[in-house]
Length: 184
Image (cartoon, rainbow, N blue to C red; front, side, top):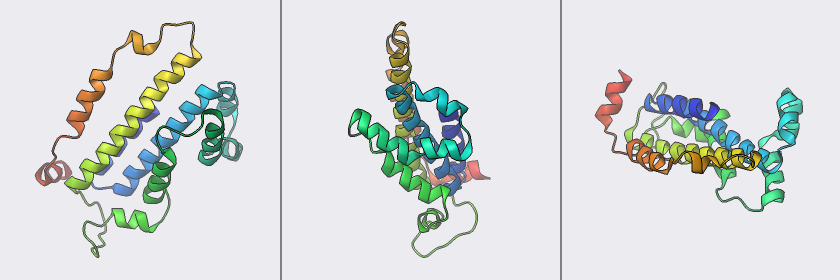
C-alpha cells in the first residue's frame, strides 16, 4: 500500500509543481523497496522491525545499515538504490541546494510556490515508474521466497503486460498546456 500511496502522492505533487514534496515520496518508495528485499534475505528480522520503534528501528534498519547488510547477503545490487535514495533525500527530504534547484525552471530564476514543468514532470514520472515497478517485482519475489509452499505469484498472475502498458501511458508526451490545465 505504501508504494501505491507514494506513487499517487508523488505524481500529483509533481504535476502540480511541488517538486521537493514529490521527491520525498520517491525517497520513501526507494526505502520501502530496499526493506522488502532485505526481508527476503532476512525474513526473521521482519517481526523485530515491526515491533521496534523510533530511534531503535532507525538504528537497526536505517537505509545505510540495511544497504550494507544487503550487500553482504546478496552482493552488488542490480539497481543502485543508494544513488536514488541520496538524490531524492537531498531534493525532497532535507534542506539542500538540490532541493532549491528543483524549484527553479531556468538557471538563476528562483521561484516561490509550485512550478509545473512538463519536461521535468516526464523525467520524474519515468524515474517514479521505474522505482515502483522494481519495488513491485521485488515484493513479488519476496512473497514467493517467503511462501515456498504456494504457487509463485508470477505464475498465478501474469502482469508483465501491465508494466509495459503502464509505462507507455505514464511516459507519453505531456504538454505544458496539460500541466497548466491540471494546475488551475
